[in-house]
Image (cartoon, rainbow, N blue to C red; front, side, top):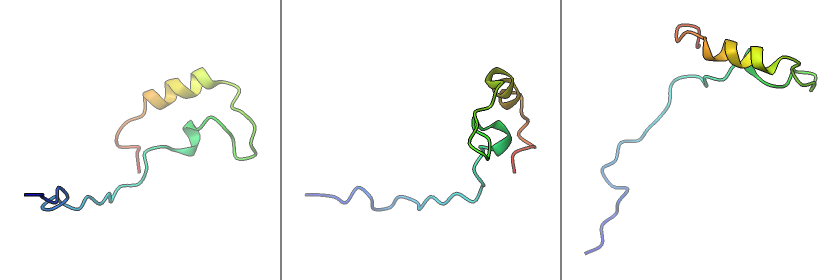
Length: 53
């Protein structure tokens, strides 16, 4: 007997927005690379869950 493995699984829909923000991105809007990537990474790792929108 062959079973459909996709049967009876809940449909997962994500209502939240993506967690990545532009202020933590490596490139600026004009395409230049951020000059202080270590500072950017440190700020990204210190963000609060309340800040994520």
